[in-house]
Image (cartoon, rainbow, N blue to C red):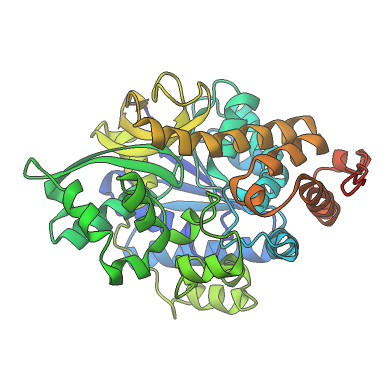
Length: 455
């Protein structure tokens, strides 16, 4: 990527409590990026004002005198001449999240996070994908050479939908689960992550570490032994169950992992057994504690006044590494979510997969992984089936496709009958009317006769 004028980075969703300030500090930690102009975008004026004050404090306390920023509620205005666009948005806010967690819970579908698969992830896709596709189309129109770094969930569904809805977009979806999980295992093994080599591939929040070596010695046998340690098992339960039964570590925390299968959350007793201690280990409705922040105004005010300082040291997030590599040509390898164009041979073509990607002045180059162990690919495909139906439902504005996605969801199908899933889908669509595109209001309900016990 050639940048002849100061780099322009657009952050959409800049009014988040922590994320945009974290990315800003990360980017400015590189000397080569200290002339960056940050165009901050948010639809909520008060949050946007706080974001500007926080960024100005980062400039001041980091002594980044050459960096500049601007504030925008109109994203098209911000996108003009952008080099990099970073998207981290939430459509519908806490009220939508509460509905998509509490309504399924009333039916017995107990989610912990619900932002990737399950009824929560499907509903989040329906209300978020149209906006994400619109962002991608605006980029193609206003800054077609810009790279889009997506941090918004449900990651795989949204990236898949953007690749379909905005062909040619330079897009990679980013998460911190691969680097987080590999560092976690290095720590558990008492080794340095810098001294390890590993291979990892799959889908977002469910990628598989298929090789993990230290000084050319395979560490997977030790990992398999550790997975049966009672203390570790209890703190990271469903992931240790995956290792115990399937042989390979999986990314993302146990709370997320417990939702993506039919094995751990099918009744209160199994939730208690496989999610002990709650929290990130799988507490019912845990996501609500993360997003229910009535103190957001006070929190942002303290950040804006530097009473709560931003850590100016670089985090492990991939965003700044990618931008630095694109600008300077100093190559990096990150793990990103991209279209499966012959990258993982036993996952569906054009699905969204998470693989190693080489980053440099020539752009983002996904690296082919090959064939996953078949049983791991089969577990991924159970998610991919739901992802595709959810994307098609959002594109077609089709309630029947919503029901079909819900019916294929592993957790929902483990708990409910088809009649119950249809009723749940209808209730969620009704509750989500304020957060969905206008076209959904014109759709017929999902009513079907209940014909059991006919004698």
